Image (cartoon, rainbow, N blue to C red):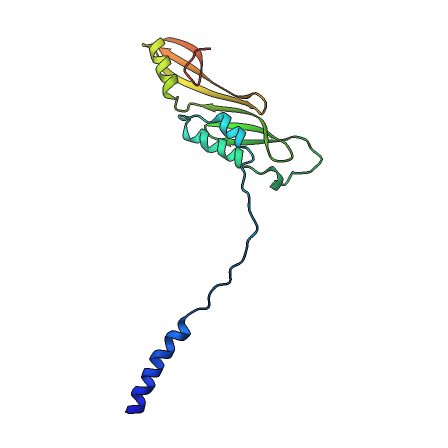
Length: 170
């Protein structure tokens, strides 16, 4: 019995020693730099009140890697890629490095920003919006131009107005 108790005591002291793991070896890793290739495009088109489907498609276009596509070859200077959703589409031109050079964007019947809604309601109080088209043209050199073509309705009368994203009539 005495040997049995001493054996359990020794086993109890030895088991925690085997459970300890050795100190991990520290390795120096190489530096990784993450950059957004299309940050200029994202900054130019950024609006606080753009509809969610529009934001999602614009981010998809900005994150697209033309070098991973099946049609990529070093011989071409410009690659045209189209992105579609039910609300609209984007046609983007990429250079061989994957940067967006220019885009043409068109979205129909999306939620208007509050600045546009307020400007229309103030200038045309008895009219209601029947449909709208949001257009964006982006150029790497000149930036983005955003406009809304809005069809207003008042009874049997219809009117079309063009407004920029700040609520200024064009």
